[in-house]
Length: 423
Ligand code: NIG
Ligand code: FE
Image (cartoon, rainbow, N blue to C red; front, side, top):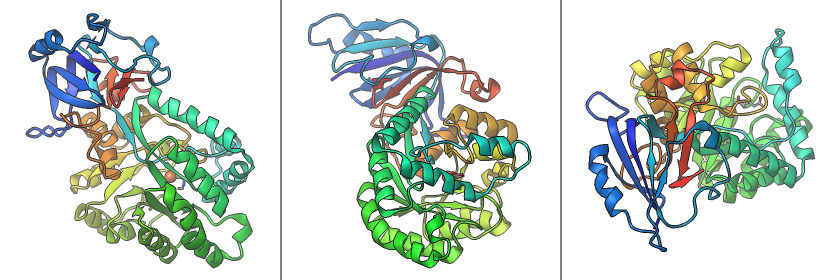
């Protein structure tokens, strides 16, 4: 089994809460990776024994000593940089290591883009859900290979920016065949596939929306469910009503899918309360909340996932993260990467926005982008640096995670490990 010792870590964010520190911060730390999992976490001084006792590779060559890495080394195809066996020592050079980002909300399987719509919006046109139909048309027209190439490009983008786990939604196909196609493609790159047939009512059903909802709850769901883990609905004026949303989510649950909801993005509504009532893992956006919504979330296991890339890209007011955190709600941050409302895959940008625009502390934002995302996906194998968890880690070219917010726009990701493999 291959081992990697990352040592001389100046600041390690474990997310194993310690006292009042939810981020479980360790200084002068080390992490031992065995295979795809974390085997040990502790003081760098105690890691010396792993240097000397590291199992020798099959050819009995001495362990590789990787010099302190820098940004230029980032990227490359998984496994290109690190093959099966052997042991390695990585000197973090006093820099910070955090868990890999968990992006629990993306829409990265689609055709075309909507740069013209963005440009018009920057001249004053408001964002509207109707633009989704344009991406639906471009997606239907694209071949599997075109969509796959695009999707893999976004996955590379995510990895390069430190995201090691991510969710992908369907929702730009909106026919039985196209939704199943998008789910199949998404399942090639992540186990976290979400059926979003209820994204908008497609143009051809504009005068027959009940028929479309029946299709989503019937044949479309049957075709997609084998490839998906989650069911989602855009519960919003201009998309799906509360009753329609409840129906779609109930049908998904009956097919073995777990619910999550797009709610309260463009105005107040029932999205949050529907999500809580159904025990959804997450309700996403949460921009327009009343006190009852916040109380419902606080008394539930439903995560409030905030997507500040949307407000940044649509010039709308940011959600009130402070109000949610102060009420005891579990908050996650995600990119919502999509061609309409937030065409960015950058979790560091989400952290910077959350801190600078939404009054989150750097520690809260980093937790929300890692452990928070894991909670929103109901995953306990990621988002935390502790023995037994997946070895998904990010080395920052910075002495502390605070730099993610303090140095917005600067590429600080110096190394990424996913399942113990250096990407
Ligand atoms: O999460 N809210 C619904 N769906 C996306 C936007 C999709 C689009 O505009 O293409 C979102 O913001
Ligand atoms: Fe979304």
